[in-house]
Length: 167
Image 1 (cartoon, one colour):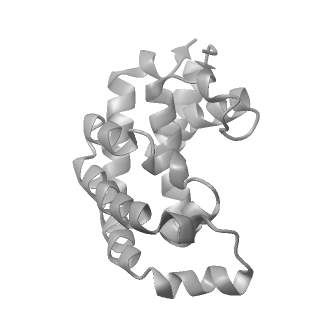
Image 2: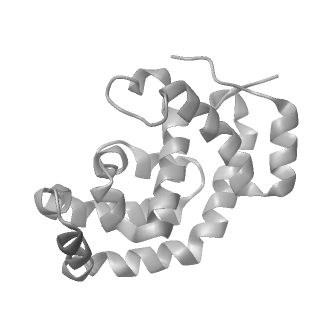
């Protein structure tokens, strides 16, 4: 496991800017250690807490940019649904997100082969119609995103030693 070190001054500055910025200080360091993105060769560089935070920021970006279909098509389905992400979110204080992810996992598991297959742009866009079951979950996430991010930021702040060394 790699030593993740963040500067206290960076955390203070980011915290003053907002919760997302605060969490991004950690995630930016994780991405540096991982060489850009998570893969099977670098998984061991982060601990479970760090992976859960990274997964949340990936989840947040992908859902806000293009929903569950985009998240899965961009290769993050397994990272979110095959790992204890939903359980971690409950531990982090984001119970509503945890329930939402379990519901999305059910859709993912039932349709994994189709959701993960290589697609043309046209096929990709058609998936949004084919998987409208995700729409309600995406809308729910948009409703809870701010309080979810706040809960996660609070958990990270209260358990900071699990996420990085601060200097």
